[in-house]
Amino acid sequence: MLYIKASQRVRDWLFVILLIGYYYVMNFVPVPDTGKPSLEPAANMGAWLDRLVFTTNHLWKESKTRDPEGLLGTIPAVCTGLFGIRVGSWLKRKDRDDSIKVSWLFTYGVLAVVAGLVWGLFFPINKALWTSSFVLYTGGWATIALTFCYWLIDVQGYKRGIGFFLPFGANAITAYVLSIFIPHYINLIRLGGGSLFQILYKPYFTPEAASLFSAVVMVLIVWIPMVILYLRKITIKV
Image 1 (cartoon, rainbow, N blue to C red):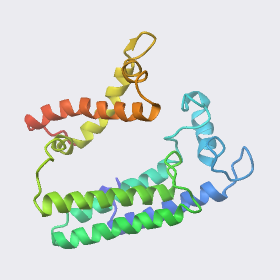
Image 2 (cartoon, rainbow, N blue to C red):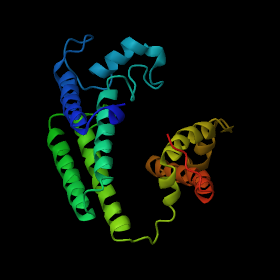
Image 3 (tube, one colour):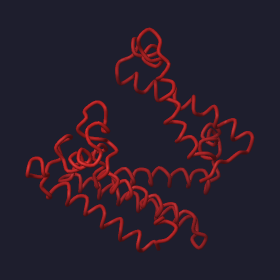
Image 4 (tube, one colour):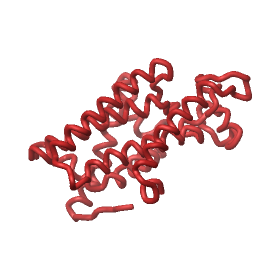
């Protein structure tokens, strides 16, 4: 709705206000349960609000005290979306040369990374809390990576070795949705008292290697329907 109804200037102001507002709430507003502000997993304002609104029966099953995708954390998550809107809108502009786009996007990304690191000194870069510094730091690196790909592939015309990734780019939202549903249903397959993934990799890998292995396997599984859609020239849009 913000992308459709609001101007870029309004979105920029909201981006700043929401990030600073979230920082203030998380660091300076006392949590009713304890009477003091906190960033601890189960004692921060976001966890308290989730318990109040959703109750413990509807929170993350491992702890029942918080949710990694909770209500208050939606505020900085919106800022991540606004960050992407700004980058995407600049990339689509027809009144700027590619060299100007690349220069500004790279500068924007580097400044965001630096700002995230500086802010992280007193509001730690933390994915579970989706902190304001996390929004800037990850958004900055994503922008730098996108700028490099845009410069290499679209501006310089380098196409070698990118064929594997094209199906994902053509149906990115579909791939994202499938990456959520496919692991869920695969894990419902039980063999010998464990899930299919656990049986396949747990006995043979360290926890870190097992996590990497499962991620690679899931990318390959999701890639298969993406290739079918790509070859049939089917693009699913929202």
